[in-house]
Length: 401
Ligand SMILES: Nc1ncnc2c1ncn2[C@@H]1O[C@H](COP(=O)(O)OP(=O)(O)OP(=O)(O)O)[C@@H](O)[C@H]1O
Image (cartoon, rainbow, N blue to C red; front, top):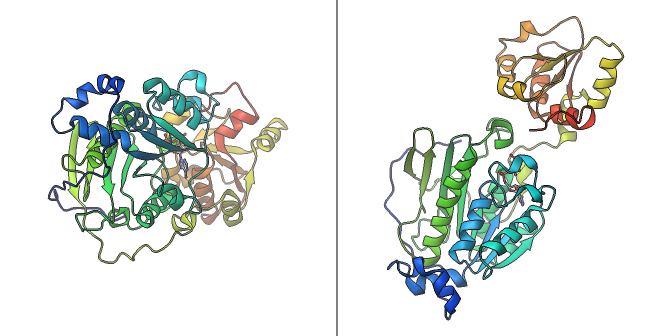
């Protein structure tokens, strides 16, 4: 990935994105009074918010606080694209959902919370996965897009679809204690025509940048970055302040520092003329594809049966010690992935009996298996679905994280 290195860009003030709605009702005046008395916002700014249609992709870590603040701010129409259901492990950060929502569609749970926050918002649910065949048409129905997703394939799709639909979008990302945010708009009146591909021309190789599911995230970081994204949305809609267009904001919660870095147009970037296969672009390989490439998987039930029948198999956990502390397969040995991939721990692996590697969901163990096979461990397998599958299929009393 190309690292942006140039310091702060000139600031960018843009004209308002949305025309003002005709009027505010008496209830709306009371509700939004703390906005109305800010001279930069005023009644006209609030009427612009009322007229605005904002599409939020993902009602997860970033989408949760973003939707709540957009609703409270009085954005008149909020679209939610989300296909997933609320999981217990979401509740630590996805504050638009509550304990009683576990198992419900996230889009519906988010809509119910928004109704509770602000009954004046028209919520439109798009309960499907954003894909190349639905993205542009959907984006065209909104003024502004907010990308709260967690995977590179969707991020490039959102970027390219926003370019084709001629829409601005606010982007954010989070990992552990660090977050980033920016605004991209190829047709922006500033004329610089920047998009996400100017910042990150290529997706990182699969597995190089761990997801929050693999590496974790501080729950409140979602609020820090989600609220910055909403701040940018409000500024774009009302035409106030200097937006993050052309700048990347980087927030470090441990240092408690914010800095912005200028984004320049990549002179080698090809124009975006259509949507592509984003999984292929990002090197995402399906589970079947991974198996075809490396062979040798074993299911949790098969492994459990083999161990119960007394087969002498070395079960090697390739996760990090913090994950080992949460849950593990009885009898396993911990040898973290990086130590095997660097070659340091190859000597610790048994040569005289079959090995089964496992991780959380099967991604890291597949990588380790490929390396181990190259190093001559021919009688090796990896556990399909990892310790999560083990907990679900073999020992439901174990926690899933
Ligand atoms: N292409 C897509 N279309 C619609 N929603 C998407 C798409 N890609 C991701 N999402 C949604 O974006 C949200 C991102 O939220 P978050 O990063 O907190 O991930 P999560 O999947 O809920 O959590 P975790 O991966 O840690 O289990 C998720 O709810 C996910 O379902």
